Length: 122
Image (cartoon, rainbow, N blue to C red; front, side):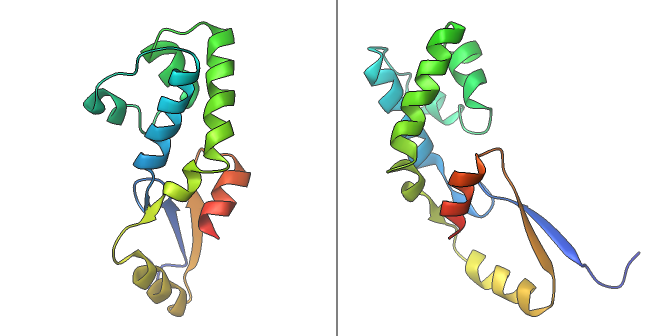
């Protein structure tokens, strides 16, 4: 067992930040654009985590072309508005500062496109 930790890998959504409002609002935006009723709030929360293609395709029964369009619409809102609906969980800035002061290398894991993840982290 090492005496110190050199690297910590952290997940972005759901660990460092609460991304739910932005993600859900962008899914609603895409569904509204397509004229599709959106599910109840509990079902919408179940869409957090899986890739968008799974949510739109498997969970909402869209065709591949519809999935591509829904993702395009989702990202249209997400890149301008949704990513800013992220909030940092209480205590996270202090935790990250403490780890940094201890000389720990911090790394982020996310399935988000690099462009989005970088903007959120900034």
